[in-house]
Length: 196
Image (tube, rainbow, N blue to C red; front, side, top):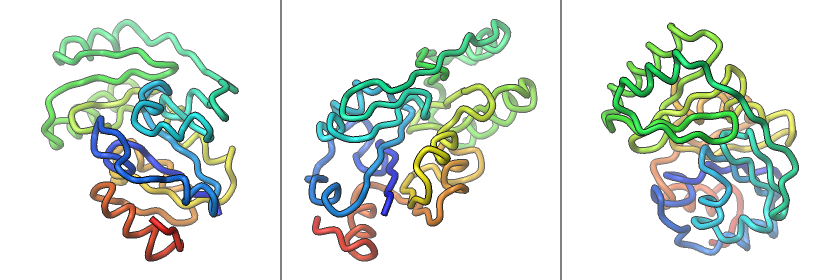
């Protein structure tokens, strides 16, 4: 069975290392990681990722066993960048995406993304981690990996309309919107026979 996991808030606490051994999971299921983070950050948080299939930067970069298999790039419009900068965000450029650290208030971020999406129809702005939004060219969010892996189960913590896990979850055969790594572990033990 293909299992796909977001990282922050799903396998790990935000910006922390995984607190449990995921190797038994990889012995009984095909495991993929998919995150808005850069590959190097994913490996810091989940050292086993070096031997796994990892979609980083919202799926715009793919590594298999540590080797880059594909990487997409995009030149973002200057007027979009100006709006993001004026919002006071710290903008981090990643392959075909922008991670923008802004006000941590979830409602503020949802409203901000709705405004970006209505103003810039060729981009998708989604609520990311605990204080960020992710901006990608339309259709180049996490959902783009669905065709690469066939049928799958998805675990994420931002599975709501406007969240950066939403579109991928809609393409999964089953999805689990989790509150953190402890809930992820409980579901794996209960529903997927994972000895963790």
